[in-house]
Image (cartoon, one colour):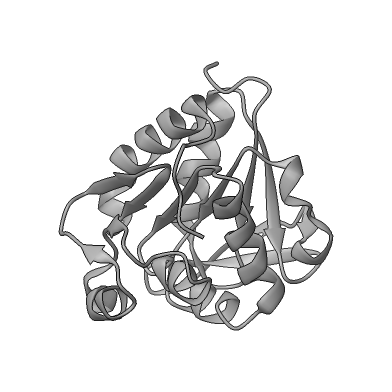
Amino acid sequence: MKLKYKKVAILAADGFEQSELFAPLEALKIEGATVDIISIKEGEIKGWDKTDWGKSIKVDRNVDSAPVHDYDALVLPGGVMNPDTLRTHTVALNFIKAFFERRKPVAAICHAPWLLINAGVIDGRKVTSYKSIKEDVINAGGKWVDEPVVVDNGLVTSRNPDDLPAFCNKLIEEIKEGKHEKQNA
């Protein structure tokens, strides 16, 4: 129970990659963390499972009413639809940016670095992502590398669902460490 008394937000919308939300959710709960699913709508959001719609999950809070100070860390699952929807939502982007301003751990996998780009927090950071958005990351100033998991001052990134074991382990490690000295916002 490394994360007892820690509270983590998972920000997602319809079309999140199912494994990239449920695997971190399970890993965090096993370690004792309280986890809230945050979204841009009430009710439930539906996952994408490889080639078709997958499981739904109940939304705990709307991002409009989710204060960053309530949370110790943020997880951003990928998929294509999920971050593509969220990256046009100003409140969601401000929510993400606030974690960087407060030096709290943030973890983004697959296409979720699109959110880091739109939030303006990727410039100068060593990161990885799904290969198809490599050029987007580089063009936004990110230092892209092809590795299963990359950690840069509390920011954890991974490429795809195959990297989930390493992603979850580093996520837990970073949350346990807490705030980080330097994070660009």
